[in-house]
Structures are given as C-alpha cells and as structure tokens.
Length: 240
Image (cartoon, rainbow, N blue to C red; front, side, top):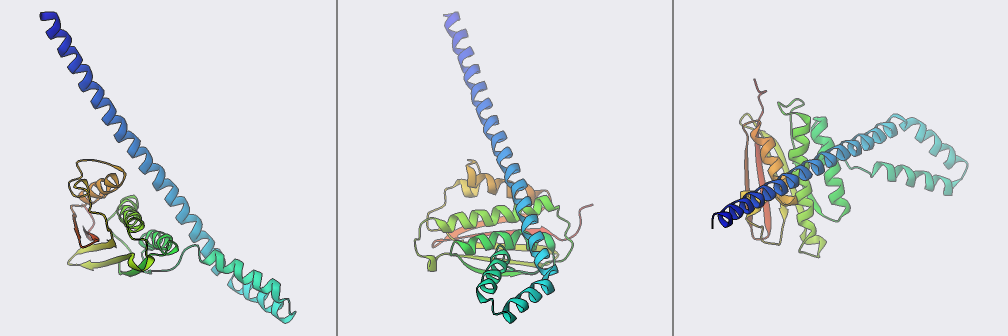
C-alpha cells in the first residue's frame, strides 16, 4: 500500500513538473517570436525610410531625367521611370506626420500594410517630439495594437467597405492618449480581456500590458456591435 502511495505521489510530481516545463517552453517560444518580429519590423522600417530619404534627396536628379526623356519624346521610358518612382514611394504612405520619428515610422508602416489590404483608415495623430517611453516599448505597444487590429479586420466580413481601423493619438492631461478602434465581427474570447490564456493574439495584448505597466499607464478594452476598441494612456513626464 505504501509503495502505491509513493508511486502515485511520484507520478503527480512528474506530471506537475512536465506541465511547468511545457508552460515555460511555450513562454520562451513566445518571447523568441516577439523578439524576432521586433527585429524584422525594425529592419523593414529602416529600409523603407532610407529609400524614401534617398528618393527625396535625388528629387532634382529625377526631375532632370524626366525632363530629358520628355524633350526627347521617349515617352515609353518616361512612363516606366515614373512607375518605378511611384512604386518606391508607395512602399509606405505618409498617413500621419506628428514629427515624432518613431511614432510616424511605426504607424505609417503598419497602416500602409492595412491600406494595401483594402481596409478603410481614419487616423489622427499629435505627439511631442520627445516621449518618456523607450523606443522598443513604443514599438511593442503601437506595433501590437495595429497588428491585432489588422488581423481582426481580415476575419469575418468579406466586404472591404465594412472593414476599418480608426487611430487617434494626442496629448491629454499630461498623458499620451492612444485609441485604436477596428471592426471585429467575431465575439472576442475572454482571454482578450483577462489575458489568462496566452494565444498568439493574447500574447501581443499581454506584451502591451507589460510595456504600459512599466510607465504606470493604463489599458482599457471593450467590444460592442462588431467593433473592438483599445485605449492606452502613457504619462508624458520622464520617469525618475
């Protein structure tokens, strides 16, 4: 009898240890995915903006080339040249322009991707040049908010006219207020609010929570009539 009890206890211990190991592995895997996504995102933003700066820097040269092609009546070449420039410029639209480089880079890159998917965009953004928020945390907060919004609009409605993302960023009572509202036809799972079950989307929300808490900010989420909204407030003062 004692042997059976000992064996049962041993099995329970092993099972508990196995569960802990599996959960830790899942958590580590999520962190690796998030780190990889942030690295890839940083490279994409840097590449796109370098291309845009290059095109603007060469503005006069482009005009001279187009003027020469037009005068020589080389219209096919001129048309191809214009299309090439247009394609490079369209890689990222200037949807917002706050003057804060990090916010502009993140938002314009994400919303350009949404626009290319046929999502209607409504964006207003005002932000100070300097924030008391680390760039990596700003990328986590805005990047995950907009990524989740884009993914949510892709599900449910097949009509592009019914899909939208609204973004509002502005200083408000010594805080930076961020609101992302998007269509979401499916009823959100409780994990999107409680964050007790970390799936891929829930993990992104969990990362937002972590980043916001570092600055003693607040996060509020709500879903009603096919629309999901997330509000974030971040203190504007630098942390001591």
